[in-house]
Each structure stands twice: as structure tokens, then as C-alpha cells.
Length: 257
Image 1 (tube, helix red, strand yellow):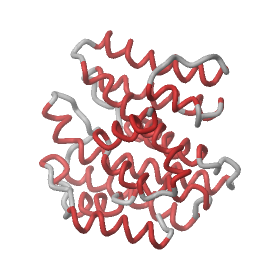
Image 2: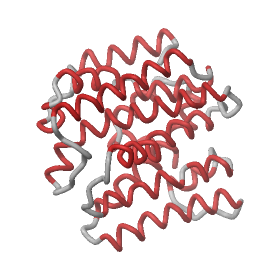
Image 3: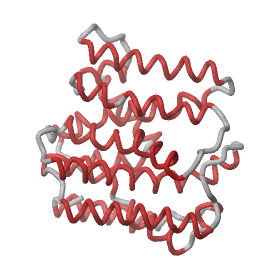
Image 4: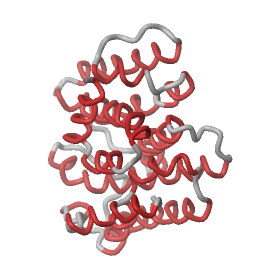
């Protein structure tokens, strides 16, 4: 029942990845859902408390889980940790350490020092998750260019998700962007679109397609942000629900991401 618990966590906490996972073959779905559930649990760990020290403790708990997996020790009993141990090898567990550490930003209120720090944050989070997703599907043997393309795809996806979260982050007193002027926001959006285009030119390992499909909304969101950067601060980057789901269905049927 732990896989079903992971699926429910992802369904509630990350609907887009949930839909993408459910469009994947059953075997791929069983490997992606524990990883996505882990990401949801880590992402929300700093937000369940207003005390940074407690948030740090919650994040350390997940770092300890990754260390147990990486070192081959018994993994603590937990509905997500148990399933995660079944899909991660030692190298992939270590790959996810920066993802957990990046979430310390959510526990505090310091702004990003500059655009480079912001992009490094996205790379440590969504970039690492995309590469790990590909690895659990058996794509670790892909070409260097293919794995680099997956990294770019993950960063672009992270940027699109971050843009969608900006209004809520602002409401919580955070400073989510290194520069919130419209021209700076539009430039960031264009940089994300450039990463997406680079991924398509380079191509990705075939095994990674179900993982890459989680980025199915990235292009549309970044295109809107580039054209209407004010929507990033105000909200309004979402598309029509029917069109969104139809786009995912088409990708799944065509075997594309």
C-alpha cells in the first residue's frame, strides 16, 4: 500500500507530475511516484512550521534517509522512504542531496544574491530531480549531451513552476526573484525557453521520456511569462484545464514529451 500512498501524496501535492506519471507505462510509474512523493515531502517540510530550526530538522530527516540509501544501511520505516529505497541506487541518492539542501531557502527570508544564485537554486532542485527521474528509469547510460539536456529541461521546468508560485511566495513575505522588474522577468523566461529549445535540439535518452513528460506545461508557461511578465507577480500564467490535459494526452499517445 505504500506505493498507493505515494501516488496520493503526489496527486495532492504535485498534480502536474501526477498526471504525467499516470500517463507513463505502469513499470515507469511505479519508479517515478516514490521519487515525486519524496520531492513533495521535502518541498513542504519548511512550510509546516514558522521556526527555521524545526524546518532544518525536518530537512535533515530526509538527508538522513538519503544517506541510509546511499550507504546501504536499513532505511527507516516510512511510506515514502520505504518505496524510495526500492528505486534509488547509491549514486542517485547522493544526487538528490542538493535538492534537500536547496529547500533551506524556504525556511528563511533572505533574497537571492543575484540571478546566478537563483539559477543555481533551480538546478539543485528541479534540475537534480529531472536527472534522478531519468536515472530511476534506466537512462543513466545516456550520452553526456542527453544528460545535459535533461538538466536543462529540469531547470526550465523549475523556472516555470517557480513563476507560478511567485504570488504565494510574495504573500508569505519571501523575495522569490532576484529582480522583479518586467524586463528582468521576461529575460529569465526567455532563458528558460532557450534551455527548452536546447533540450529538443540535443535530444534525450529514450528511457527518460516518461520523466521528461513531467515538463509538459513548461513551454506554454514560459512563453506567457516572456510575453506578459506582469502575470508572474500577479498570477495568471495558467492555461485552460481542458487544453492542458489534451496536450498531455497527445504527448502520451505520440510517445513524445
